[in-house]
Image (cartoon, rainbow, N blue to C red; front, side, top):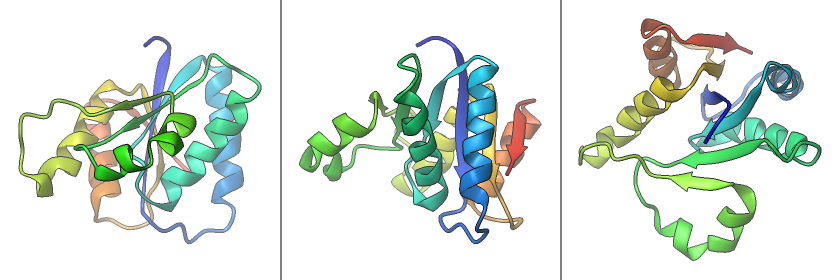
Length: 147
């Protein structure tokens, strides 16, 4: 893996209609800044919007990589192997120390934030996993871009 890393953090539901356009523009700008690695947790509408924007850019720029970062192995990865292999360049399941599965998403989010150079975020309320991830990223000195 090489290049700058951008990760996504957003609520499951996107309530603002122009988020898709803002995400597309911001990801194009990040690619121009040298970002080639994009990490997604693959959970919810915002992650899907970001992933689709990266896939569109990948059609023109083969250097771009989209990686799915899972908190633990899911049966769907094996069951729908063809989908995952065609949708992501790599699936990573970090070694997060055997935490209880109910905490695994939070620990995975911190793992992602620690490795990313920038967080592209959609956060409209002051609670929840996306909010917590952005606060943690800011606390450890990461750049967070809110769309």
